[in-house]
Length: 452
Image 1 (cartoon, rainbow, N blue to C red):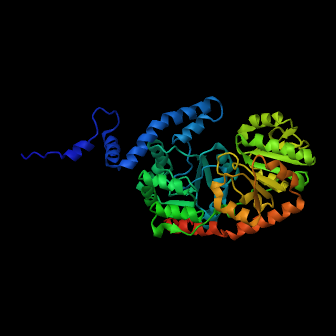
Image 2: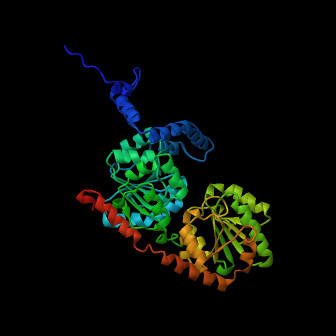
Image 3: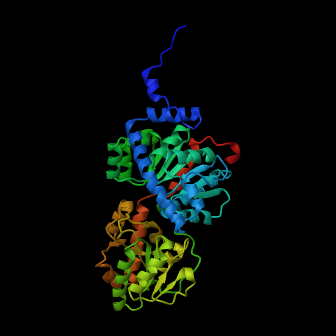
């Protein structure tokens, strides 16, 4: 009898004995690991080292009552996914999800039987998706980019496709979807040149681009960066900034304040409120009729924001507590009401531009006719802010100049800026982008007839 000798490469890939898992499963995992290229192995190794810290932080959030045990289960790949076979759309937080709402509506209009599974990184964004109250949409938290968590999720959800919004390009998520034959689309995609170079330098950029069935960049700079990372020309779609079509939400209540005397600080972050309050107090000394709506990005921060208002020596009413808006400051610490505040304010300071957050959307307040003020950190919407500043539709302020700007920007100046902002953002294009993307995505999918 002839003895067949096992080649050394096979022995190297053979799983170690003694595992309590089923041998077949171990062999699959061992083969995937041993045959993975070095950059992928390094990413997974680093992620494995970081995960215990990440999970400990999530457990601590549950212990402190900031999240529920079911939230942790969803992040670890468990939890409800609705009916299997849905279209999976992932958006990081409120802004990204709000921008994708037009795309979701366009998909459902063209395929009324379609089901969409929305995942987010934050509980507030999940709440936003659930507030749409559409039985065809299921919302939950996204699984971590750990292979075991994603494997649990994929086994339950079995999505028909994955749509990622803006910059949510996670290597394991993309590669595991592509390995299962799941089409992956990136819409409104954005990335800085520095981030693109970093992904390319560690060897993962081209691999992530290879998983994509189609990508529509948000701006010219991002498009060039994705191409430099190795995106194939036939997978590059026309640029589309979904935020140009995103509305601020319905106006459900009118605030009885003079609009020209009302300032909105929208989606502020830690450290920004104190700067805005100091500037507002200085402006109000010169312009006593001035009022402030303070809307923190995360309503759960309301206690610390309220403390900052008290420290500034200002009276305030709190929306979540049912306080009547009869004080100089109105703490708008609720979800889903930003449309009310944009409609009430003649001036809007855009949060995340003093704090190192890259700045939040200028599109929604501009659409509602606000005069826009922003700080120096505008990386998230650099093209839009550049157009706004050049056209006189927005003003760059610092903590030192904000007070004087608030005091001096009268109704006529607000109106001129609002008109210029709408013209500048309209010139960027994007009309019909959601409908066009929906068509492109559905063309790529082999949907059952009953869904279309």
